[in-house]
Length: 333
Image (cartoon, rainbow, N blue to C red; front, side, top):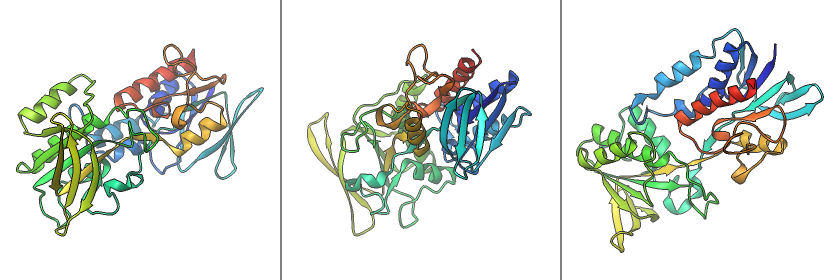
């Protein structure tokens, strides 16, 4: 029986493990955290159908209950070495594991908004990230810094993505639609709140996404402003003053808001950066590089080493699941 080691228990890694196990491969999944699906478990509802993220997490985790799957939590793989017989993996405790093939599914980490000091995250209480807003929405606690329902909220797109200053020139793909989704959720919970979305350009690329964008404007009265926010500062009443420019009108803009929500993008996780470098497949920005983005996107330059999910580039949940299936097929072939 062939043995497969999958590093990362996110949606892509779990989906690949499930399919391989059903085809009688012996699969070991290594997850450095204490639980699986960490980057989905911190969400409230998922676009475009606003399904509860907990339902997705529970369904995906149930897939790991299989006689052919062994899951090792709190296990951080720090070394990978190939010899004539296969692959040798080493964890943070110095324990070794053997596998015929290895699949990297080490995923992403959210951009650290503290790096954008001019936007005031960690300085002013009214500046939060999109992950903070997910928590507020989940527990119906969309409140300003003094515990009251906000009268105005501004969302800022592309924080840590398409940004020369942060060093990330790429698009994180899901931030635009996430802002629209969160803006709608805010209006559902606080109908009288004014909601603004500041953007460079909106990339509503998925099925039903353009319709949701239109619904946000027509049904919920959400206002979209084409322009970047250059600076945020605190006010005496614990609100946030922002400076921007309406690039459609060609006019400077100043606004005071109860909450400024920074839509943080995706960066390769520490595990992705480290293992991609160790294996000699490090690509742009530290993501893992596949052999070919068109026909061999799950294979790498190393025989028997495969990649899937957001360790390669930003993806939606749907894309990551489908890429896990594709990786399983590549391994079986």
